Length: 50
Image (cartoon, rainbow, N blue to C red; front, side, top):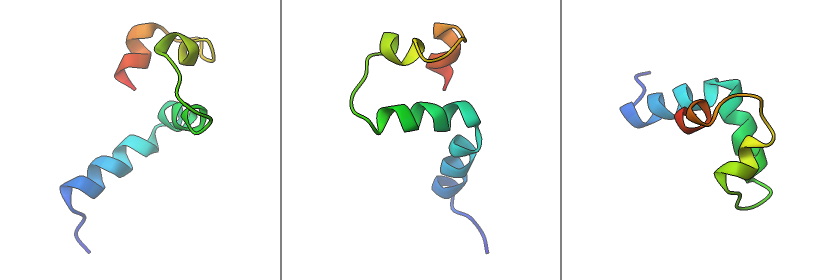
């Protein structure tokens, strides 16, 4: 079965553990970048990447 580009992009995005952690935080509700960043030890640039 061939994945569509959209499916491939989605699976690539959720394969990263940090992105899944951000998604889990956002399930609780809207958060600013600063609020999300408070839960992690990486830089704001890294957070923007994810």
